[in-house]
Length: 162
Image (cartoon, rainbow, N blue to C red; front, side, top):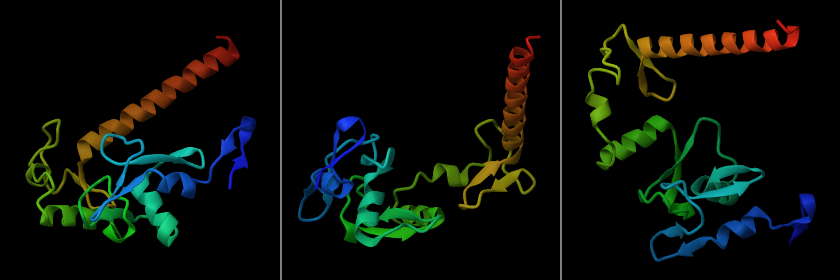
């Protein structure tokens, strides 16, 4: 069913548009629409969404907050619902490591990209299980506050015509 959208364009429901961009093979159902060079993408309700996530939502419903849609088959363009499963970012990384797909270099790195040591005092663990450098994080926050303060000063100078 087509719906007349904004500016008079015919709007085709995403469920119809989605399945026309899928090539169903014996094993995987491959996304043939646009990609971000790794995963399939499609516009849905005014925003770009990953095709495998939309395949999950169209088949099973909403994705709970904090969960990823992972591939059993490890084919990033696959949108076949029975090849997809829900998991946390950490579980997805563990699955990738178990299958030998994960770049193990980061896990064994002893320093961050800026040369700071990953030790007990300087290592920050994010809620998704990944780690980061406390010193770099502190510097990023400092720079962000500085940019905000600078933008405020410029705004006030224009507003007050100083």
